[in-house]
Length: 102
Image 1 (cartoon, rainbow, N blue to C red):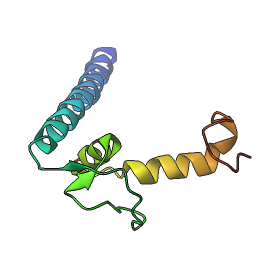
Image 2: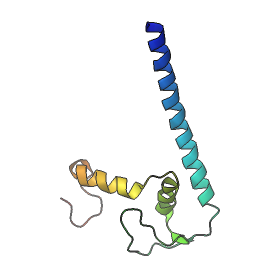
Image 3: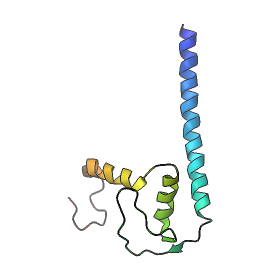
Image 4: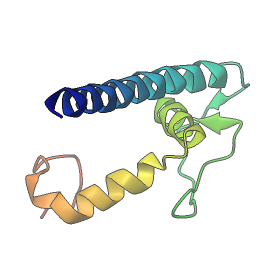
């Protein structure tokens, strides 16, 4: 019985580890694929939808590449960061360039 337990535990650990590696590879592949798109650097402010909003696909800055790569994996990084900051703002650095720091 112990042997079966350890085999199952090992398989679960191996599966979780391999999924993590696969997701990292997929993120890298998604980011590399985005480098093939014609995008002009444009730091202008754009009003976007929330969640899943994006600036025009032919415009953006470096963070837009990261956000778009995560979206290809089904993760809305902007939403995740917003929700984390909303829930844990008190543990974020006090000086982040915002005029209205709490």
